[in-house]
Amino acid sequence: NTLATTQANSERPEAIHAPDPVKTKPAAATKAVSNLPEDSALRRHYLQSQEAEQSADRSSAGKSKEPVVEEISIPVSTKTDIPVEKELKRDVIQQLVAETEATMPPRPTDSTLKRHYDTQLMSVVLSKLQASN
Image (cartoon, rainbow, N blue to C red; front, side, top):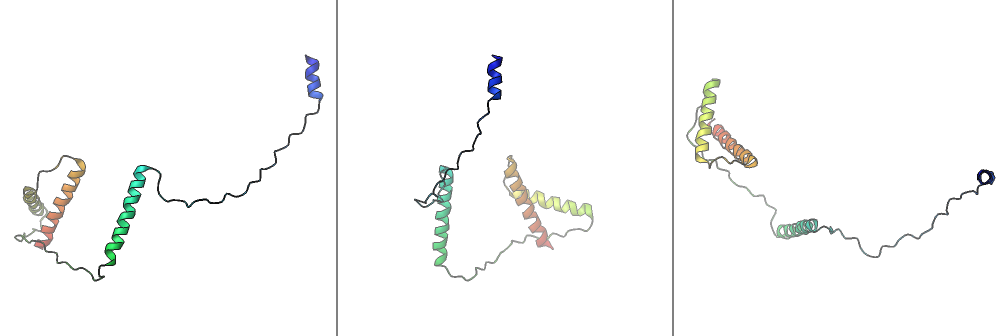
């Protein structure tokens, strides 16, 4: 047993050579590469986007390039005199918020809808304040 291992160690190991690199020809393109996504949802959105772009191009081709001018009319309610003192100013603003909330639908419970409601409310109050100046 020990004789076999000494003979194996004394034998000269064969040199290990790396394999020769495989030479291949470059692949020729056989068909055009499509930009159409393979996923069904992505494909649907991609096709809808393409259709929207094409219809926008078609609709804008027939229109003239003159600018559209619209008059923006903000209904001016009774003028509100805003006091200079902080406390009175706060009271007037709170009164405007309360009056505006009374004309709007109930405040939603959903956080996103609530945020939009608050933004719309503040926008109306600000426009009333600016109209009174």
